[in-house]
Length: 61
Ligand SMILES: [Zn+2]
Image (cartoon, rainbow, N blue to C red; front, side, top):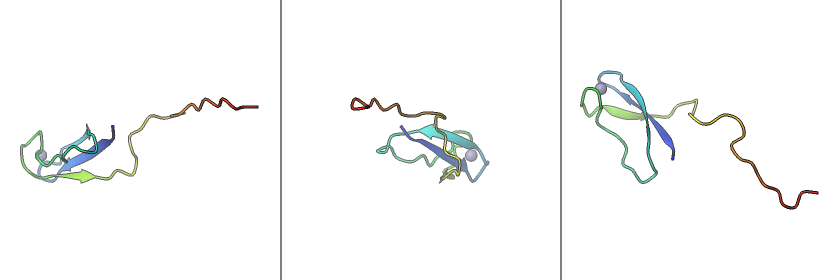
């Protein structure tokens, strides 16, 4: 599930939310309840470090 980064333009509250692709984006701030939240496209995405995939190579020689 992707993690989206949001920020409130009213109070500056910064938070992340795990949402599926089909979920509606959050528009209301959970802190001040103002409809001032916009999505932030962070330059540093939150993800697990290290080897994300371990490929089982059945045809390794
Ligand atoms: Zn706010």
